[in-house]
Length: 283
Image (cartoon, rainbow, N blue to C red; front, side, top):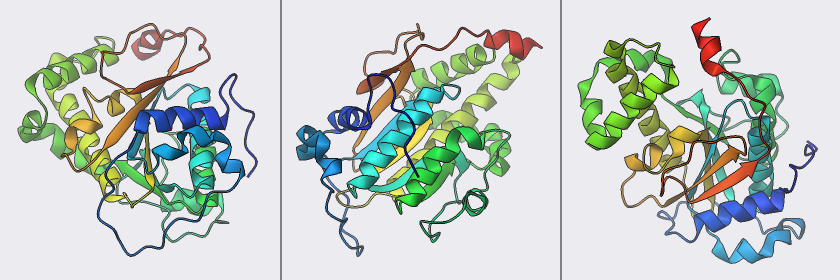
């Protein structure tokens, strides 16, 4: 599948270079019985300065869901890592845990891939994420759902045990984020339950990524920026055996600063046109 036009000032090598610099070196998980990855191709070695940083850990790539440049960046990262044989899996927020493309051939059609992932086009438009998914499939890399299944969300909302899965200050910030994210339109009685769902989703994504690790390769986890934040999301649910690095794509029009330590690197992308999200919600 041909690659789309490169992002302004951000080619695939630059994307991967930034991810690898964010990644650094890590301890690989215990060896398994899989054969080692194929050697890198000469074209994939164009970004040789970061090659010495391999093997990478889990790489979390955060996005803004309505920023097309972010999905284009993701595809470039998948293509570059896949060309090196350095990608063990792509884990997605956009598909539920328990679904994946393992076992599908590289030439599988989009219909088969969508069925394998139980893709919900109403929530996650395939036209936006399909190119990312198919880039991985064509490279022979499994794409795995990581999100909490919808059938389990009601139980998570009612389970106060999730409140203790994160530090108290994180729980308070999650509740505040629920209010802000719903533009103050969500009844306060629903804040704790919605925060529990968010925490449970982070834990599900963390488990899927940890289980997908392979020696000498990277797991690329793609999710919303809030999910990947080191101070708030998925990294809080790993023990010391999982080494991860966080890269967050941010449109230049985004004005809210990231807290210090929330990410290892920020990948700037072109500004987005102004939108009033709250006006749409009020309608």
